[in-house]
Length: 265
Image 1 (cartoon, one colour):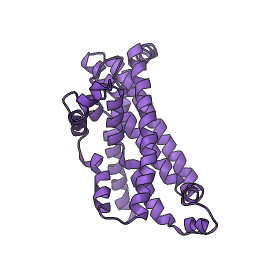
Image 2 (cartoon, helix red, strand yellow):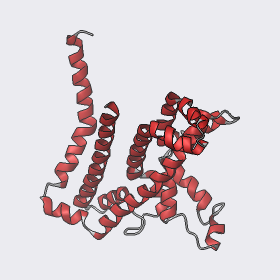
Image 3 (cartoon, one colour):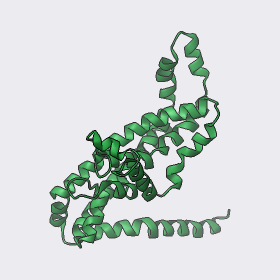
Image 4 (cartoon, one colour):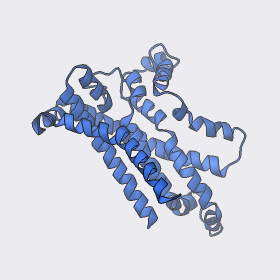
């Protein structure tokens, strides 16, 4: 394409990104610090804000390892094995991409709520899932489930089984061969999946809104806290919490960029 035709396309692409991403984020930063740094610091260090922040990190710390282990196992099953129903399993993995998170939250209530299929049985044993941490973790696990699978599966196909089979002939067990040979070979796919899963877990709103009960200081994540402060007309608190989420997203983006550079080397 001639250089004369490339410049308008670049301007269009950069203008679109600025309108969709840079301007809104910049507006949040400007509004957050409109009255100075002190109100922002007071807002992000408020007890409910700190609880929401640490609860978000706790949920991500539980959901990400679970989805990482499941994602690696599921990718191995999909790539290395042939069985009836494999295509169905492959399609089911993508359900969180297709279904609204709100629907996922409602589905969890139907199963684990007080009037749900398992809710009364769990309640008799003193286990509360909905409107507590377990339900929020389940919702987050569900919505962030596909990322590790979709990042690892293509790498597994590319790696193949030759090195694993060579390790088998040398006396290594299948598990040891996978841990010593295959897992290091797919580490970048796993790393990308972990980063994307972390970003999705930290930013989840819809499903967690339904199953959490939104109790301030108890079952309120940082995303729910932003909405709570905005509805209460505490704009400084809402913008400060939004800025915290933006910083977390930036850290995730930097981690992804660093991984790409290391992979390039």
